[in-house]
Structure formats: structure tokens, C-alpha cells
Amino acid sequence: MSVIRSLSEVRGTLPEGVTLVAVSKTHPVELIREAYDAGQRIFGESRPQELKAKYEALPRDIEWHMIGHLQTNKVKYIAPFVAMIESVDSLRLAEAIQKEAAKCGRRIDVLLEIHVAAEQTKSGWDFDELLECVRSGAFRQLPDVVVRGVMGIATNTEDEARVRADFERLRGCFGQLRPLFDERFDVLSMGMSHDYRLAVACGSTMVRVGSLIFGARDYADR
Ligand SMILES: *Cc1c(COP(=O)(O)O)cnc(C)c1O
Image (cartoon, rainbow, N blue to C red; front, side):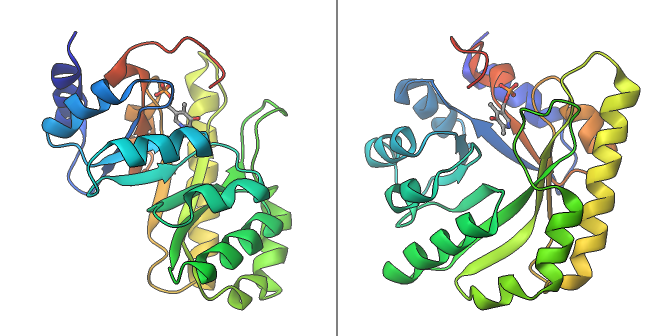
């Protein structure tokens, strides 16, 4: 199926108020351009250098979201232009983003990635540690890091009850954190190709859909 068709099918299933991040990692700029021409403006990537190369090759009104694990020493590649870093999983990373944001005179929107999946290999905060960190006031020391909400990945399983429980947990975390930030904290990013409909039913406001739009990737873990 063409990108244009699959994109419009996915869009057709999303209620108003749910933002679609088209996850284009590993896919060539030509495919991204097709989606762009069909009106898509928000794209997600998981590697900083790849993100930078695509930013340079494509129109400037694209909003690029970093969704993969980010090393502190790579923040500099994307800080000048990235629209949102969804994968903030440590205070150290948030501090590195603050430093680079200040250098380029920008404010950078971020999401706090919370670990809810059964797989230990997945990244993200332990929620209790995150809560403690937020309550300590650490994020108030980072004026150019704008915490917009929460991101999470559900367990990769056929067991729908488990996936639903993960999404509900994320929504609970979102609700608990919300009063600790200002009114800009309004994003709950959850749901990928295989589970985004369930995520939306559980209150997601942002879905990150890749393979359903662009087709399968060569490397399953990217
Ligand atoms: C790759 C990726 C996605 C998209 O996955 P698909 O299954 O292709 O939709 C979403 N979120 C994150 C964090 C990813 O790394």
C-alpha cells in the first residue's frame, strides 16, 4: 500500500485531539517526502545523526520528534532544531538538554519516558524515582527544558489485558505528575502501530506510528 493511503487510513481512525507522530526511522527521505506532501508535518526518529541528516534534507516546517534512547553527548546534534524530545529518561539527560538549549537560545519541549513494560530491557524512568526527582524540584532548575508530559511503551505481547494495564498505568502516572508541572504539561504519548487504537481508547493524546504507515523496517529493534 502507498504511504499516502496508509497515512490517510491511520488518520481516519484517530479522534480529534490525538496527534499523529509518523515514525520514519530507517526509512529514506523520499518516503518521508510522500507523507509530507500528503500533509503530515510531525515525524519521529530514534537516532540523532539520522534525525539531523533528514532535517537538513527536508522542508523546514517539519516538526521532528526524537523518540529513541538519547545519549547525553548526542543532544548537541539535534538541539538547534528538534521540536520535542520524547525520550527523557534521566535527570542527567534533562540537564544535558538544558545546557544545549541554552547554547542555541531555545526552549525545548520534552516528555518524560516512563518504564511500564514487562521487558526489563526497555528504557524509561522507574515511576517512584521520577516522582521523587520531580518533587525535589530538580526540573525547576532547568528553565529551557519544557516538560510537556509523559511517554511510554507498552509490553510487546498479544495479551491485550496486559497492554491495557500498561496504558492505564501510564495514564495514572500522567495524572499524578500533572499537578507538579505547569499548564503546558498536557501530552500523553502512548501507542504504536500494533497497539495505538487501544492506547487511544485509554486516553492517549499522541500516537507514534511507524510500520503501519511506512512498511516494515529492516531491523525490528530500531
Ligand atoms: C519505532 C518506535 C515506534 C514506532 O513503532 P511501529 O511499531 O513501527 O509503529 C514508536 N515509538 C518508539 C519509541 C519507537 O522506537
